[in-house]
Structures are given as structure tokens and as C-alpha cells.
Length: 302
Ligand SMILES: NC(=O)c1ccc[n+]([C@@H]2O[C@H](COP(=O)([O-])OP(=O)(O)OC[C@H]3O[C@@H](n4cnc5c(N)ncnc54)[C@H](OP(=O)(O)O)[C@@H]3O)[C@@H](O)[C@H]2O)c1
Image (cartoon, helix red, strand yellow):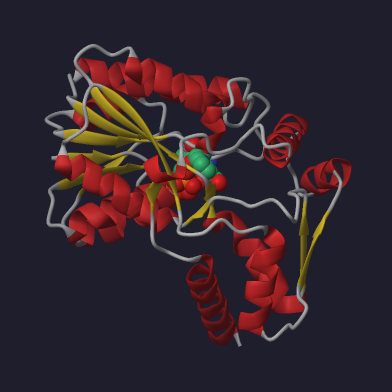
């Protein structure tokens, strides 16, 4: 029995689908039971639970051969103390893993964990890694993927609409982009292969690093905007935009600081590229899928 936490998330849904594709017996956990239904239709057992519900997690981990563990969601826009939220999720996960003597875990972390002074909303990743490392008898593979292509969905849609997108990230910075479905496939393979030792950390990225300026040109080509552009906005502007779209001061400050850490390359990949796991989805193909979906949704509305 393979158990997937965060099954409604980008990566968790990828893991669950990849395991089901391979014919594995799967139990999925999510808060939203309706969104879990498609996994049920594919034969998975469904558990509806909050991420910090220790007792429900323990019940869900019963009899598990291996568990996919993650901190979800990536941030909560209205949170006033995201660290406290992440600590509660980590405490519940760790207690349930220990109680049920789960033998193996594949854990989602991220390239942010490479920076020892990383703060919210990524600080929990380092805590999760350390707490898993400390569990006696648990075999853990930590995955540290780079920048999710899903972060670029709004960027792709903006360029398709107007030939232009903006944000706080530097336009010239080569980002280790990766599609979350690929992370799901790597995690599912690892869960099934069982070949990691006591504790290992692997970085993951897609087949190419791309800057947002390069990504803008790719999306411009796909959507008929020759000369499509990406423009960086100041941290102050980014913060104002987050606040005016309903983010708490705590969360807006945290996201601006995290983006600065990426811009200043404090958050970066550190393993030699030949030791990283390199996945296959290219940004161009990801962008095509996003554009096709937006077009279909627009067609359905009109
Ligand atoms: N974005 C990046 O570039 C990046 C890079 C490296 C690592 N990471 C790490 O990846 C993780 C995020 O992975 P992901 O993108 O797969 O997750 P995600 O898609 O952001 O997770 C969203 C899911 O979280 C669940 N959720 C639980 N509590 C929630 C709440 N209070 N509010 C809203 N949703 C809640 C929801 O499931 P229900 O529908 O069941 O409610 C929702 O579907 C984070 O730990 C992040 O640090 C991110």
C-alpha cells in the first residue's frame, strides 16, 4: 500500500496518478473529498483529512509500504504565522509516521532548502528534512526540485493576452524549471523501487534552465506576439500588488523576501548537474498545454 499526502496538490496528484498508472495499490489523502474522487474512480482508497490532523494521518498510514510526504500548500495568502502552520503539519506527519512505523518515505522539499537561512514560506522544508532524518528505522529520500513551471501559468496567460508579463523575479536569471507532473513520476518511481538507504537528498530539474526573458520569447512565439517581453518590478511594487490582492502583511513580506533570495541566488541548486535528476518536460511543451487549456476554457465560456 502506497500512501500519498497532499493528493490534490500539483505534485501529490502527479505521484498518485503515476502510481495508479503503474498498477500500484494507493491510498490518497486530501482535504477536499470531491477533488479526490477521480483517484477513487481509478481504484484508490480515499481519506479526507486536514494536513495537521495527526490521528487521521496515523489511520491513513496504517499498513503503508511507503508514503509520499509533503508540506502543502506552498503558502496561505491570509496567514499571519505560516511557520506555526508548517510546524503543526510537520508535528502531525512525524508523529503519525513514527506511530505507524512507516518504513520508507519520499519527501518533497525544494531548492529553497539549500539555503541555510531560508525563511517563510520555505523554512519548513529544512525542518521537515531534519525531523525525517532523525526518525530511527525510517528510510527517506528527499527530493529538492527547482522552480515549478506551474508558477508560470499566470505569466503564460498574460503574454498570450498582451505580449507582456511582469513580476519581481529577475528577467535574466536562469531558473531550474521543472514540471510538477515530472516530480510526481520521479517520486512514484522512487516509492516503487525501494532502493534508497537511510537518508538521501536529490535535486531535480527539467531538461533546460531558462530565464523569464527567454520564456517570454517562447510563449510569444506560441501565441503570435513577436517581441513578447517580461519586465521585472521592484520588491516594493510586488509587495503592494500582493497586499492589494488580499495577502496578509506577513505573507506578502515572506514572498517578497523569498523572491529576493532567488534573485540574489541565495536560493540555488548546489549539487553538480550530473548528480541531479533531470526530467523531460520542456517549458515550451508545458506552455503549449497551458495555452490549449486556456483556449478551451475560453471556448466553453463563449
Ligand atoms: N513552487 C515552487 O517553485 C516550488 C519549488 C520547490 C519546492 N516547492 C514546495 O512544494 C510544495 C508545494 O507543492 P505543490 O505545488 O504540489 O502544492 P500545491 O499544489 O500548492 O498544494 C495545494 C493543495 O494544498 C492543499 N491544502 C491543504 N491545506 C490547504 C490550505 N489551508 N489552503 C489551501 N490549500 C490547502 C489543497 O488540497 P485540497 O484540495 O485537498 O484542499 C490544495 O490542492 C511546498 O512545500 C513548496 O515549498 C515549491
